[in-house]
Image (cartoon, rainbow, N blue to C red; front, side, top):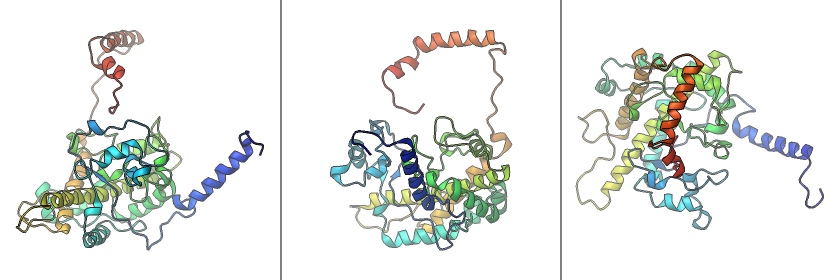
Length: 363
């Protein structure tokens, strides 16, 4: 190649093919089944507290290529971008670090999560405690949760295979949005572990809202314009159903892990410097009679709460039904309405003032 000249197109194409081939084993393209010895890892990345305002820590620059802002906090001090330094100051306040969890507890997390949710090759949703389910909804039981959410083991095994082939490279093994290609795309892939989804049509309260199954299937069928999420309409409707079941499984697992860890880390922080007393280490979110809940009991409560919200979202009366368009149906009606909206937008509303002020909040 001559100095000062860019590679020829055939050469660039060859480099891309070789790079893609190198990623293929990581992304699961060479085999549609996970190794039976593989397990989901216990979470080690920072947890974002959901009840804290984040206005003062909004990003001020683009992500570092190939790395999400929270992951950049782990870099050596002299390699961290400016935003990472700001985020580091939030650890223990708005960010919680799983590194503070004792090693024996981390091992217990791995054991219990595997018992409840299986492995990548044999996923499942189990471990429902009747007392915890009754505390949130007396009508709930294991059978109606599994059937409503379609998280039976046969569906999940099919879903894990399709997820490995089509989704893992962006969304990651455990649904953390950190697959091999995940940090390289903008906006980053969805992290399922918070149990929070952008596109939902259920009318539940904001902090409890779960998507309806149709919402997940719509994204799988149509993709999301303006993002790297493609349409998977090439798959059959049944295969997309399997994928939807597996996404729900990953979300349930991740939310149980997240909530149990977040409560434990909060208690660890509160116990520092405290004198005497035999303080609880975990939080039972549903059963008030458990004064010193174990990790297992805390996870059972968090599973019952998350599953109940998913089941609730699937009920017909929880679907958002758009009201009829009130302006009119003709093109003339639409243009008149748009003109009125334009005057409001450019007038004394907050629309133009927010955009000219450089607001970086979510659209």
